Length: 226
Length: 250
Image 1 (spheres, rainbow over the protein chains, first blue to last red):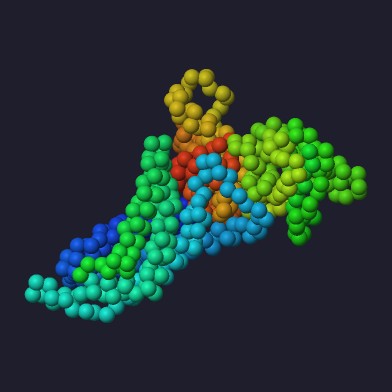
Image 2 (image 1 turned 60 degrees about the vertical axis):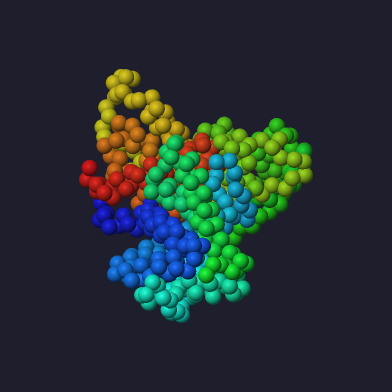
């Protein structure tokens, strides 16, 4: 019998790792969105929240863990895509979806397109926001980073709106297939569970995409809230 | 009715292939799709050309030998049926129909529309069986099996190994086939003792033979002539994870 570590490179294990990392990243997105919605409350609330995060000693290990999950998800997915290309070297002249019970969708066929879009977007987003200009705000007597000002300044510019809207839509499209697919990859399938997972996965994708999309649209067209 | 069939012609395993159009004239709507190809072949032979090579055996939808991608869908437009059960009444007079072989690295084309599906046999040889000595057939009720378990195992065992799942998958994954075989045996008491080692061995064989990853799209389930559910793929993954955790000694 092959040593057990070989298991981790099988097609089944690859999908399990992609699923675990992907669902963890979805969990992060939910927390991230909840924090971002404080922009609707106003600058003091948003800056107070960001100050709690920035000044927390646990934030660096958490960020590193998040980065590790992100890298794992990307590397495994690229390896998988490579194997899949090799598995069908000669393409069909004509392909159609069989319909019926198939879950094939625009989202499921473009995972390898929306994935890299999200990858580049996250890098640009972290560079502009996390490593962007450090404005200072007064937070009840303590000095804190004025992240609110940076967000408003950035998203009021048409060029950033043109970047954020399609990229956030790509996140939604990726999750439209990704969430329910992750459950399948983990073997979580059942006559009662699966119909619920399929609906909940799409609902979560729409909720996350709509939540994130609302912010740049609101700030650009309505100015946001100071 | 008259139709045009665009058929993949390839002289041999290593030859270059291309789609060649043929006119099928005065075809009866009651002919099966394969009978229509037989008619085309008769005219080809009569004019001294090599006939279109395609696989078929029982022509009653149970052997899993026929294997054509018709207009981009393995086994054609009907659900839950093999291409030998497809009839010309499904098409309209004047239609152009594209016919291609299964496409996968693990299923190399031998000639025209014939592919070598020996990879499936290699997967089964890797452990898709019960190796315990069972003796002669036991009494019908000697091993009690709950009705729902027996039904579930029978649904998995309905697989005829045609390979349409691989042909339909955008990644040419054999997960539905392997899932069905793993499930069929893991569900029943006879297959239970070797379930962990079997799941590991079959997945290993599938990967080694160059099949792709499962993307959970369910195209396989949609084209499967026996309508085998992707629940079998989920069960294969659970069995595999069991092997990962427990090891294969037990």
